[in-house]
Picture 1 (spheres, rainbow, N blue to C red):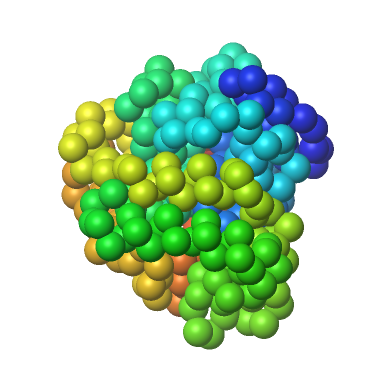
Picture 2 (picture 1 turned 180 degrees about the vertical axis):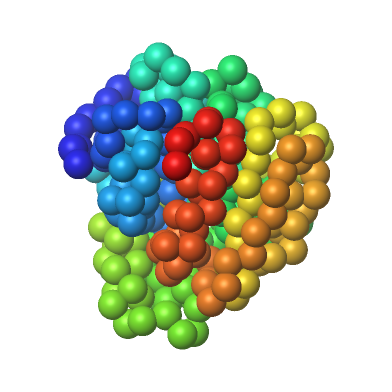
Length: 268
């Protein structure tokens, strides 16, 4: 596994990479996380594909943006990482990362071979209360600081039965990853977004995953995505909360690999 800085749309975007063969899998984390959340995917899936996980602009080891970023800007930054590698990519987006992935698929369809969208939604702009709550998170981060913010929010992202060591890892990852202004730009991008009208334009084959105990975006939001995208499959991940890819990595990785074998003809 390697780690290095890569330029993306004028911003220093840090990526962690693993694997040296097969198609490209680009992993986009949730709004309170970083590339560290994809450690199980980097470790296991890299035996079959080239896995690249980013720290979004303004997160963890990536540089702070020089100006406010919209959802289009985040999608364009992800597109730059794909384009720099000279091939279309399979995009694995979790929560906010799934929203970015879906916009990437409609904005740069030639760069997207397929999508895996986990515990995501059409955006917080579908409802005024959700949009207001998303914007309020940035104010909470400003008032509390990353550590207290992570300790408050982190445990909500996994199921009640999640092991203590996973809860600690989620909290530690969040505390080390979130800061202003990047988190504020991310929250505003979610608050302004309602993807429902553009989901039918997604042409990439799409796997939608959702933890059965996800109380953050929830099963209904994932069902909305799967029902609107024409080429989609929908999977409930048992015994998992909002971070199904971390809480049940074996099951999620198996579904992702099955999807990739179908869409990218990866051999058994």
